[in-house]
Length: 549
Image (cartoon, rainbow, N blue to C red; front, side):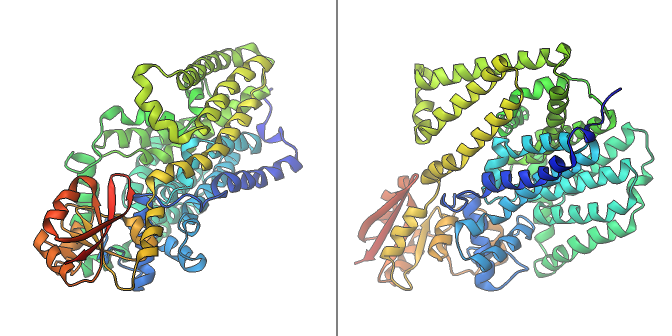
């Protein structure tokens, strides 16, 4: 007789599971959260939008560089602005929303998994999710993706419980979470949730009316999301066309929007986001569900539809498939729990140990390439030098984890190895931020600045530099994310149409700070005659102070 996984853990241990996950997530997501500088473009952009909400006291129309910025809905901007208002204009306050969203995601993974299989398998799945490398990184970066992931997965999971139990009382909560997901990143949340629910309903041969007859839930969804869209459309009539076509349909259907990638783009991305657990995905995919086939079908559809939907999109960015990690982690955690409970049966672990052997071989090869890089890998080796010695420690853990598990026959060691790898990520992100953040450049500018000195961007600008210096940019016109805002506010005094307009403006100022890409610096000296003093560098950009003759 098959044992009930819910009974495999005693009441005291079961009560410790959520607390353990809180401590785990608190350490991985919040430790030194404010240490890395804000990185452009995403972190700088969203932090600056939140700062300008407070500066302008306008919570309904997001602004960037004092222009309406309407590419995305405002929920994360609101949450970030509230955090900045409470805790100050710091990196930690700016990143608080994704960190809390990541923590909420693993707690929801536990309670959702417990509803499916019991507390012990749920804990395994939530632990897997919490220690996926990509999940940790995106919980510590200010982007929209982790907050979208929390609310979208909350909605999808609640909807499944409402469908499968059935528990109609859960639908209002599912639609409430879906409304918050929509206010985070737009109608893509509605499309994904609808595709997943409908696909499972059809495959299980259940009536579609189970999805549709929930007037209170639909009323909540419409009541939460529609007012903001209607208000912005009233203020700026071109908004809906821009938002729905340019920012959603065009990104999905055409290559005219940036971030165009091939169909297979997300295959390596998924493996990278789930490290180190991605090595076990082939093993989990090949296993027959130990029980509850319907649950496994839904989780597989959940991950597969998200993966396929974004693979079909012409525009692709790595974080798009972040919501797929949730169902994959639960599936993997369930299989690992079942494996640990049935190690006495050789059939259960033969394929598992074969995968571990492949994992160990690949990891030791990567370690050898790091220590003795072949000629073809030397450029990559030089770029990775910024992560020394963290990359070495990480590869050692990645190699020893499967090796010791094979020798000692203790699958628990994989969880230990994943946790150790996760603890390296905050230090690695701090090292990367030294290249990706203009924080040090901003400190130099602040030390040189006089009240009222303008900051000018020549064919380029840095959102994070604006956040740190509390200054918006005067910009020489170039194609940018501010284009739609300029169409709405064409007479903004912050933009120069031609180099001679910039020269005329600079002539009226006793001192100007100019931010310019290095390959444009010679042109700048042709446009402006005066004294340039180099203050600092950031990536391929230079910061000058300029005094006219």
